[in-house]
Structures are given as structure tokens and as C-alpha cells.
Length: 303
Image (cartoon, rainbow, N blue to C red):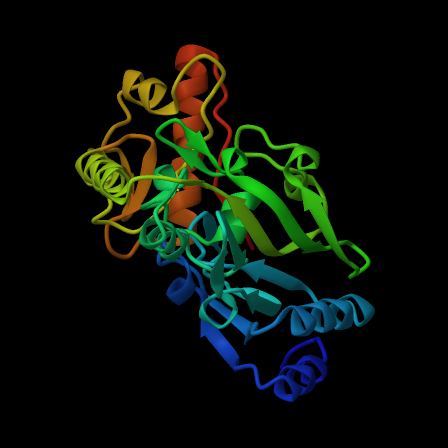
């Protein structure tokens, strides 16, 4: 039996016609395919519902977690108490206004990149293949192949710590390497405006196809993972340091340092939360002992 009055949340969700799930396995909602059941999950379908649920959680001291595609998280096998607010398919609209794409936080980067291509808009090609939502990408200023979200963000709507709806422009977001103002504040991104430029659709598609081919060639996309496990240390690369410590292919249970790209820890089948955590610590300690560099985990651990 839950320690929290989840019926209050269920009543609010029902009033908005939102889907509610109980004891939902988190492994079904993370790219690592790891995680026990959450007590309650609500599939958010509008900003107003999100605002009311967060307010209710705070008022009644109910733990809550906001996730999108679950592409940068590792969830405990013991599951999560309280409620998971899922920003996904029911909160994922995107539309074009001139050279700006306005999208809800749950829109996938893949869908938004495809929309940009269909409208001959360039600037977002670097994000094609990043397995996350727009909200998550802004939260961590996701980037690849020389591009970052900060290059294309115009503005963002969010809920502040008091539940007020606010808008912030790119220059105020404190965007840096895998960091934004949202990383440090108790804010929730609800929608994003991306400013792109008109381009040649053939050139845009060629760039997207080229980057996807590079991802498939160099990254272990055939296995569940949370993407790059460690942040890039100043002046170096996590993968190089890990390889230099002869850790490529090292395993704990079914968690393994990828033999294809040592910057990834992968789930080879039935890896558990403890396996991945133990391997992360093993890698950090060995690299530190060998090089003096303490790697910082990029993956958000939820337990």
C-alpha cells in the first residue's frame, strides 16, 4: 500500500482524460531497459494538467519525477515511490511558424528533425539520432557532431518552482556543456521554440543520413544504454581514458563497457541497476588511479 494519497492525482488526471498506470515497470520507459515499477505514472497531455499535478504533489508531499524518453537515466530495480509524470506521445505536438519550430517538451528529437527536413529548415541535423525529447535535450543542452541545442534554441516555456508559467530566452538559459539553468533549478520545461534557417532539403537530408551512418558505425546502438555514460573531461575524452585503462569490454553481470565505443556502458541482456552502478564506480576508480582524472557521470541516477 502506498504511503501517499495517489487518489488525489488520479482524480486530477481523470478530469483531463489523461492515462494513468499503476506499478508500471520503468524499464519500459528507459533506453537502458532497466528499472522496477513506479507506484503511479500519468501520461501528461497538456501543460495545465502538468501544473496541477505538480502543485498537488508539492502540497501533499508526494514524490514526483518528470521524464521524457528516459534516454539519460538509470532507474533502481526497486522502482520509484510516488508518481512519474511522463512527457511523451500525449504531449508531443510540433508545428512550423516561418523558420521557427514550436514544440511541446515531449516531442522527440527524431520527429522534430524530420519536420525540419520536410520544411527545408537547417540547423538541427546534429540532433538526428539523439534518442530523447526536446525537453530533455534543452535540459542538458544535448549536442553532437559540432552542434548543440544552444545553437538553435530561441525560447522556452517552463513552470517555475511555484508552478507559475514563464518564458525564458536562450541567452538567459546559462547553456554550457551538458548544462542549463534547468539543471540547477526546480523548473519543468513545457515547450520550446527552435530558430532554424531555410536550406536545401537535399543537403539537409544528406547531412542527416551521414550523421546517422556515423552513429551506427561508431556507437553501440544495437544494445540498450543511456548514451554517453560520462561527461567529457576538460581537454580530453572519457572514451580515450577508459581505453587507456584497459577497461574496454569489462563487465559486471550483463552491464559492459562497450567494445564498440568505450564511452558507453551497455545492457547486454539482463543487466540490473546494481550491475551498472558497480561498473560505473569501477571505471571511475580505475581511470582516476591511472590518470588522476575523476570522470563525472552524465547519466542521472534515480532511486
